[in-house]
Image 1: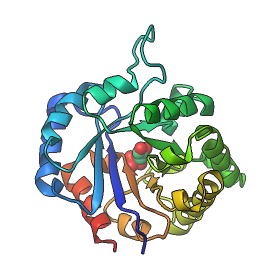
Image 2: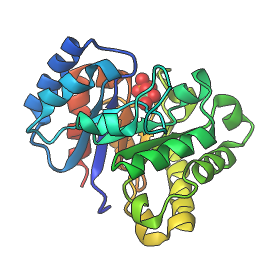
Image 3: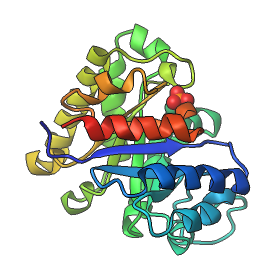
Length: 256
Ligand code: 13P
């Protein structure tokens, strides 16, 4: 049994108007708003953050953004800063999602700047890493993940490292319906934990939650969540409906 509290986050990606988001949050709060055995976070698009934040106010459900800029302010058209996210009571921010890396050209260096800026502003990064299908098939998975972790977390202090949540998302499993086997996922999660030990020491590494993401659904979650180093999930498709998202939270709460 792990002493780490399970963590379930919904990444809505570019879905839901503010009104649709409020309806979804209302349903989530009604079902699991008092849940204290699992950290539950919803991550709407920027336009839905403030209204979703008001809808979850007073519950245990927390608010996360999907991206941010690393600078504090200035001429960065289309971007928002960590302080802006904090001002509407976001507590978490997804950083380095594979869609940001591949579609928007985010490098490890950019992701690193974002991680450092988020921590400086008391925002908790949900730091995403993962290999492509070609990388897995060529046997490069662990090397790729190692580079992403080492570069992405460069300069993070031991003291702040416990604020980070790592999300391992094999790119080939995202939105494809293909889920990593429990053995594949646990192998990479254990490897990531080992990297965290090297970077921050054992005590810190044992506290950091490592989430799995990639076609996680109520049907496959219990087995994944029961693995020693899988501390929760970053959920895309199944987070868009209250029923499946709530089932995932309930599945995480059932793991003792
Ligand atoms: P899916 O759950 O839709 O595969 O998406 C996973 C993901 O990218 C979460 O960030």
